[in-house]
Image (cartoon, rainbow, N blue to C red; front, side, top):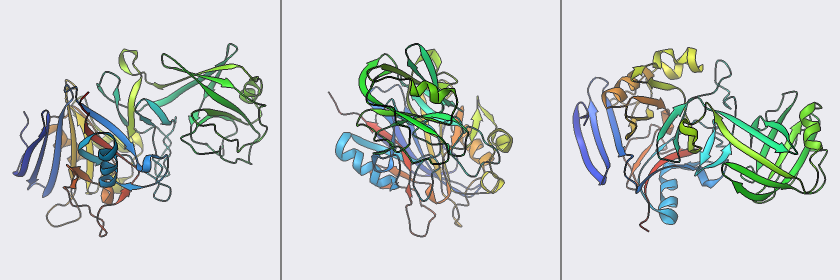
Length: 382
């Protein structure tokens, strides 16, 4: 058991296997909130939740907690998660929620990287083991023996000469308008699942323009440009069975599908080593974010993958000055993390414990509406 350094001001068990502590560390000074979760507890679920339960939009973490508590189990604790677009609320990285892909990318959707790359992501597999890697979407569609690669899911990489995108009903009612490139779109009706492979039936004529209606529970496969991919989608005939596999590179260990993926930026611990100082080289971070002290939110897990850690540190005040990423990595390692990554921080940093915000958000307006959150949920008894 790793004991928090400094002066503990609060400590309690939220449920068997889940503890909360609040403490101060005079090295900063830092005001820190920490939740530990025993992942071996079968009744405890780690869940990713999107604001408003939509691909876009913003919502306070405390409101997400209330919504989930009212509908689907008791939420013990929650923190804000991925970076997001302040205007639209859309998160920047891959998103898998309860085994469903909401957004899939090969390059992180961020305007702030010093170079294009995939940011680190946290996940859980179907066997409740935690994951951490720079995952990219590996998507494929098969029709009559022809494989068509899916470059992105629910995200249009405008400005590219060609590419194939799968739009699901999570995207909205219709596919986006794209007048810059030739587009062909094939409507896919849901037809079940075989293992990890999604089954669809082609319906209707292939459209020669964008803006197709996305059927509920179904999808639209859109090919942009005039190359081979457009020809492949155009050849999908009415009534064809189309098989789609959505997975990750690198693969999830033991061949399992991800049950949850949520992004951040950057990884700060790898196999117990503090790599935060290399973040600019590895993940294209900005010095004003990585090397300055800010409020922080972090997630990590132990060497044996049995313990999850959720941490926030307050900042921008006399009582708590915030952390650099190197400092954050050191504290996470002291607390027992072997793998760890940084979530969105600054005014977004929020921790909710038993329905109450326990940290001190730095925005003068108080708790900020964010794009998504990670929740610790007690599953209802059978």
